[in-house]
Length: 495
Ligand code: BES
Ligand code: MN
Ligand code: ZN
Image (cartoon, rainbow, N blue to C red; front, side, top):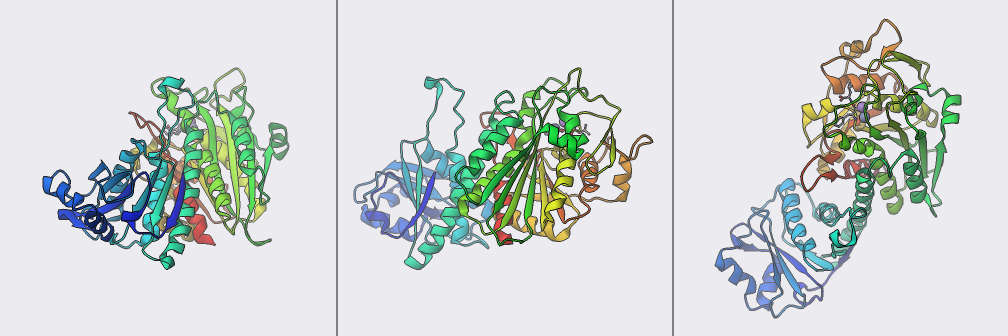
């Protein structure tokens, strides 16, 4: 998907589809008025029929009326001005889904006169870019030829009212393109089945993103080196699998030499059977998505490389497959983490925190400005927040404030849950420094408390994306690409 900015008269523009906006009660935007004037009242006629009123989430796609140069005309209803941010996003989504179902290869959108509450034109462009990337995404690679459904729409041009605004629109379009591409990389990695995407595949993907990039280097730590580093927790997860664990370090030096890096650590469990604490069979296929944290780190790294963000960022992917076998870790086994803390593994299905804790210890040596880990960590997070909002916990209010701020602008929502001594105590055990589970209640919090023992030396936040990383049923089943918009915006705001 490509996004551009241009200034031109909408009615004179040659393109496969021209989109103009209308508001409640059929009120015209400037461009809608121009198109109506040039086409002998074509839009007015449609409004008169009553099929389209300009209400939010309403849209019609028409063969272009005579008098304009585009091949198709898309009317986008946005509802009552000023438009709520979420409503704008939904309306654009509905309209773009319509276009992506047509044969139109390119689309030109005019946003003149559109007023979204507390947001500006660059925000509209960013959101539209992201929504467009989502609306045109396909995951066809395992379908036979005749089962493939291709989408033609590949380019969106934003019409600017004047040259001055064109510059900022162009910049926003470029960012949107990078975020959209990053999200789609994340979605494809998430959607890949476990047999196609073991830890080694994530390592290959990291190297692919770094290919030809002077500012991005990739290092892969293999199991032998993990052993030497004392990463007993991470290794305990891959013990039952034929697929070796990989710890992947992507070092992007876009900022000044010596500036402390921001670090993203992603959970990359490429398939989570639960191990010896085997999960029930129903819906277990969804545990191929248990590497969506890692995939979001790869997608975000790709986005910031594409944007050439002037910031030092390290992406870490901690990856293993959680399988039962004769070599697998047993409930009750005690392992020693890289930090030296011993862990009694009371449930082998609480493996995410085990792969994360050694990675979180490893990154200390980079003296980070901030560390964010992203993980499909607990089913309890789904119970607490559902599919709409990612859980956020951490030891640093400023990192969490910054995440909240980025979440608000991208609509990639987070909600903070509390932590504290009382919860941490739930991890006590007579047999080791800590257990890997904290009992029946507050599962998302005790998981974060477990991680907090390994993050005491730097500002840290944890995102539990168990509910938001994928849609679990229906025709839209698949990875969402979240929280790539949130993470990318967070990093942009650090520059
Ligand atoms: N990957 C799962 C968490 C998960 C479950 C995410 C369902 C999305 C949907 C994680 O490894 C896990 O199994 N967590 C356990 C922890 C428990 C054993 C303390 C869980 O949530 O049940
Ligand atoms: Mn698990
Ligand atoms: Zn898991």
